[in-house]
Image (cartoon, rainbow, N blue to C red; front, side):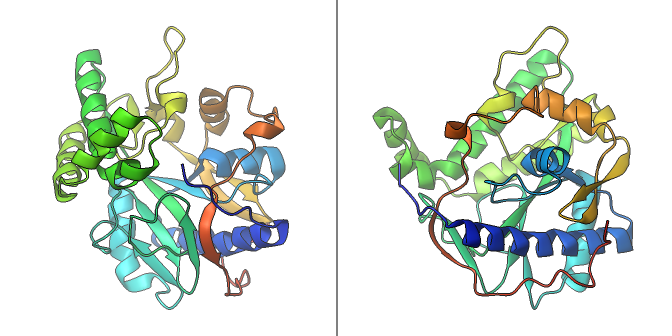
Length: 293
């Protein structure tokens, strides 16, 4: 596994402020066009536990439901400040390999260690995850989960071919990387169209998978994905002195994802995404955007 650079605290804080400028732009567009979004993952945890960024965190995560995500992408073509920002999807960047979007800051660079093989635009980014329906029936859900994991692994193969530690997996990735990215992306696009034909109890990001909480051992009756009811309404939460949208049931969401979410993790588990190289030579403008607390 490639080792990256350890960012000095001053640089990490500047990175966070650049990302704050970016989420303010997302918020501006969404408020103007009445699009719901949800501050999520570590960003929501940071808002609740720290009032802003988790001190060692280096990214911002946002959820949008499929219909609002598609509307957001369409509006970005005309209303996004394109002098500063680039809305990156597999359609706007031929080298981008994921099934969710990233908002990138032009004039910057943040290339994660080990991802040098992905030659897409690599400016500082925030993740915009799109949420789709997840099948309720167990066998359908199992097939759905295995298929989407296979697609994600295929897309990841250009990285896994050199970065995977286990030899047989590394060899498998070397085979998978020859598959045109349009095939797994097309499969996932077909999956979302089918699963979104009717409403289900749970939702998920088809294009994103991680070991926890997705593959953890669940308690009896615990959902396999995110409960739709958690995202039925929005509330506002303070993050770095600004107010952003999140799900009204954010405590249930955080408890499901992190357990005792107010408890700090041990120091050895406090990590960020190490960059191979980075460039932060822009000055974030936090005035005139969003709403102050």
